[in-house]
Image (cartoon, rainbow over all chains, first blue to last red; front, side, top):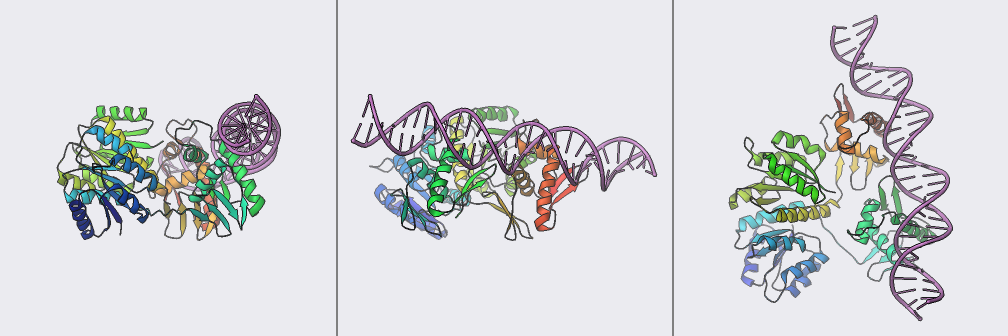
Length: 224
Length: 224
DNA sequence: GTCCCCTTTGACCGTTTTTTGACCATTCCC
DNA sequence: GGGAATGGTCAAAAAACGGTCAAAGGGGAC
């Protein structure tokens, strides 16, 4: 069953919600301040309830930090109700607003709706490998094939990492360009062609094979 | 860019929202009653704004019908505000509530949040299958029949996907052409004939049957 | 500033896909 | 049965696309 993280400075509230959600069949994690919340992130919650009015913490900033680590739904618990706040909150990476006081019934319904929409389970490791011995260390930005290192430039590595972390999935050049260079980037996605070529040359030289497959008329994908 | 369908009986409101969302870079479809909405579903909107208080229509039932056809986010536009309504609405397959009157700013923010979320879940592979072993992997753009892969070109795959996601429904060539190439396309819908032929040849070669049925004088439909 | 490497651009070529138009086959209706 | 309308087939032309290369453009290290 889904794992829900509850972040609120009032212990009574986290306990109450925790109890209720457990009764509903969910697994729960509770945190009463920002550091605790961040510490719990590696437990990979499937949904986060976040009080953005915790004393001593900028809830929105915390939300942004959390969002940069996980992709699960984030629901705000808040007393603020102005429309401006809602817009800002959603901009900071939140997915929904629930204003205090709220009923457990509505809360549960919203949680269920969001979980229904987001039945993914994502695990991210810092080292990616292929069955035949290619090892990509993301944190060190280095690539090895059976103990021989392959050097990639920065852009090349980003493209490689992107395709590899989404192995099997096809992306058109536009999409790769956006995901790697950022949405607001303006350049021509034609550069991807060249990066792909460079990556392929280097891989072929060492691995004697080419992990990147071309799907004609569509894009590229990693196939190991 | 994402395609948003707006369903409301007030033409003025649909026009206004349509204009605004187009300004925001979205593609829009508008419908002023339930039948029109259902007719547009095959266009596969990425998000639906639905007025559940349209006269002569049970909005919730419409929502449920829509939900049984598509999986995209459905946002309610409504004047109702009781908490009971919210729970019921979410139960009927809705994803969010926006109560009238609302600001365009909040609406846009919520739409963006839901689409962002959907894109995340969209990275999960959605797979269509037939009872006898045809497997169409939409995210990888690959088709298998009992572990044997069948290769399709881009257009061919789009037509195949369209018919399969709307299996059992008949579409004339004009309609297929519009849905696949876009409304503003100018070419001759006669090309569909040729694409259908190519698809059939490839399917017959491997599956030894032909899932695409010709309805004489009308069009084609997927029959598995 | 100079050098070097990375990144981007634009052009070219061969290949694949997409479209077109002509022609044949089938169905429908009188 | 015969004619008109609709659907199927085919091959060739047209367009789109991907791979490649060389050269220009940028940015950091020294």
